Length: 258
Image (tube, rainbow, N blue to C red; front, side, top):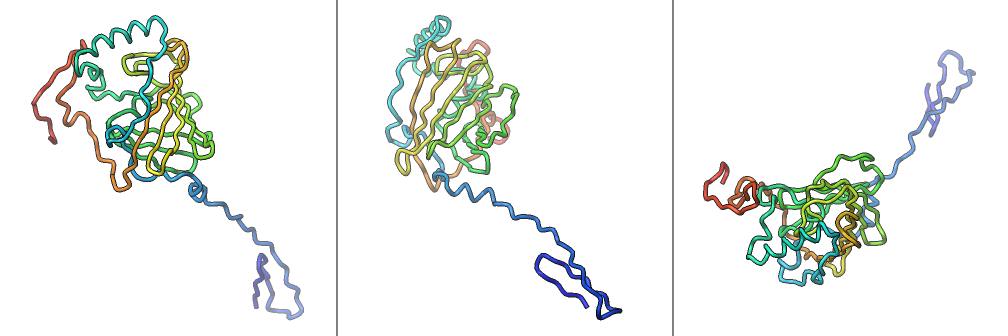
């Protein structure tokens, strides 16, 4: 007959009652911790976040002008002159459904949502259905190709998520009014709650080709616990694109799905 013990398997012969059972060790796979349990210690950023100024709340202190190198100072001055005409500041390739890139992705007048998974914070931005992936476990690409959202590496400093983003496409805008930057462009964001339903993001831009010193701005976002991110297909209803010279246009032609 056969008998079992915890951690051992006993084999008994049936022909001889005096035979001695030989215990065989059974390997046991050690239990691994569920990585999702660690997420419960992170701050509650659930719900959907809207730029506070569109929610009728203070959106953060107004930014001062950036301190720029001569090349980009001339470009910024030209933008400021054009900006005297109402609406001209929106005339960029963003009007042609081209993503603005970081940090502009976080400054759109549409809501966004934060998702926690082990080793990563993902930001879903309604504008253009953009997605940002912030790696917090060292698994980020080590030699990334430049992209609109760049490569973001983050770590938690108590309840503040500190994010450094590099490898951002050089034809994106480092600050409103300027197009282009070098491959040294880096964006650092510090994201935290200042009130239970108010998030603050402090953004610092650095690039020796563009700025003579780091340029920092602060923006706030209001929480809507019952909102949902909607699908946003820019080309579906885009009637105010720009031409190859940057001039604004407008069309009432309907597109499929409208």
